[in-house]
Image (cartoon, rainbow, N blue to C red; front, side):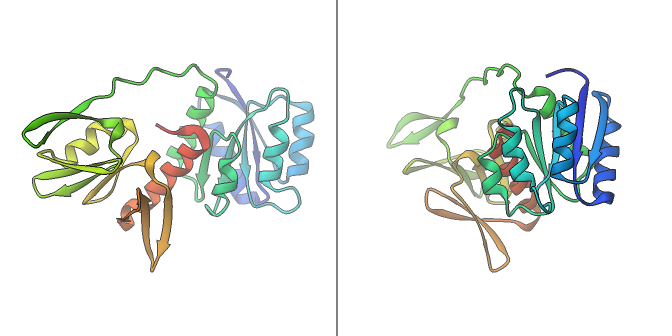
Amino acid sequence: MPDHLRVLVVDDEPPARGELAYMIEQLEPVASVEAVGSGVEALRALESTLFDAVFLDIAMPGLSGLDLARVLARFERPPAVVFVTAHDAHAVEAFELDVVDYLLKPVREARVQEAVRRVLAHDAPVTPKPADPTIPVELGGVTRFVRRSDVHFVEAHGDYVRLHTDGAAHLVRLSLGNLERDWADAGFLRIHRSYLVSTRHITELRQHDQRCIVVIDGHELEVSRRRARELKDVLLRGASGGGP
């Protein structure tokens, strides 16, 4: 991916299109930004210009963003695609496509900057992951070691936490707050004052009676209201190939 990006913004709503194009062109790695109002106009622009990235609204009349992304995937040198939408209802379909990021409207400057960073890193060599640390646990008078990667979620119990693994749970004297800080880079996210979860082990995300709930290994874990937006954002980014 080049250091100076040529970006195409596609959105049928002029105010949203103009605002997003303005935010993108303020970023130093961006060399040029072109903005169009439909999928058809985007295809015309792509015929004459080799864009590095396309910031693409999903819900558009005629050729939708999902349809256009499928067309782009067949290009010999497909541009990086960033979906931009007011709703997460299309997330499942979007996950099937090789998108770099998924922005929810109203778009924040910090998220646009993060999306551009992900575009720049697209197809870059994968950095080796750090070593998988272990946690000593006592079981029947014997000390065993649980790998962090085997922990599906962590539950607070006063001055202790319970590490839930595949079919087992281990009570250890640790701080949930410290684990939240130390394990953030490994894909763990605090969803509630009582729960820290490994996002890759989440199998369902539900809305029930105005509550947000995640399911891990059959356990239904409540997500606090202030954490729900962050969780959805992380899941959407991770599923689109932009995980931790």
